[in-house]
Length: 350
Image 1: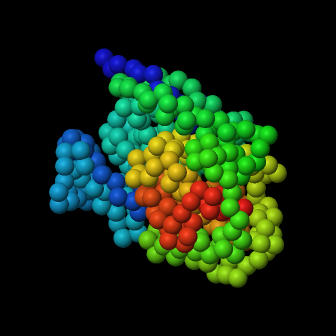
Image 2: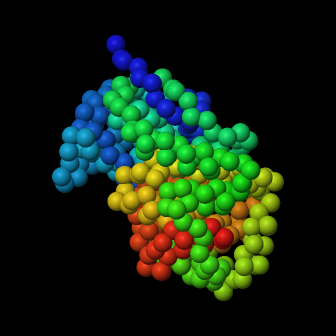
Image 3: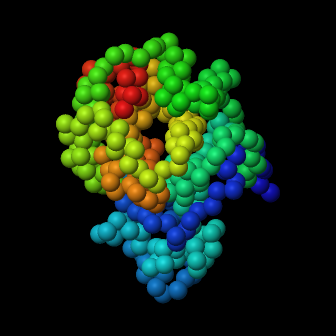
């Protein structure tokens, strides 16, 4: 008998459905995915067809320093594809043996269940979730969802109250998203905006472009195009690139609100698991928004369909939410002289 626990999560948590074979880019492509020792031997012990058994034998490898919780790692082919994914885009293991046969990470993603806090979240790195958020006209609500896991605790009331207050400010539709983030900065850092110029702001973000064009396979092409297209650009030309995005609905503020609200809850802002304090996390949040702006403006001519916009956003959040982006963002901005919340707020003008 499984004990069911009450978890706090966004109101679309239980209604979200994986696109399965309809995904243009699978979530398992190009990223290290590890499974437990128990899952590894459970999969090896399955009775399957000869073709699937052949794929299973080459699907994982055991790295040096393996632990019971992270025992075997997915062994991608030379194109970065999972060996268990069929030509139709579906997981052959799931098709043949059922959902219960696949590892937890494959079954749950993009969901993340925080049993220690009693929270159920979803990552913006999934294109299906991005599509859901882009089409949503109403504010995200956080509700109690019943899940077959035991919840072992809740966050301290003061920290939780601040987290939800930040989300509430972001959902104030009497203000723009930029104004809402400035209000968040004033709440947690008691700061107001500085006075850096457009050219200075753009220059401060070039290290982001240089870094992720080198180390992020999913973003390198977007970064390289942005670097070429934004070299020496004026504020007026920058604004025109956004106006050329015919794929966006009339009120794109709602899209940005939904993306950021879900991201802030997923990251536990301003108390993420990174090495930053609240002030540094706010600086990183400003860097994130400016970096997204840079990617969209720099690739505007290739973002004329909703699918192309979804692809860029899911690639970006895949990198942001599954790497040390926020920690790196604070370091990069500090190196460019943007080491205070006041400086970081200037980036919101991009």
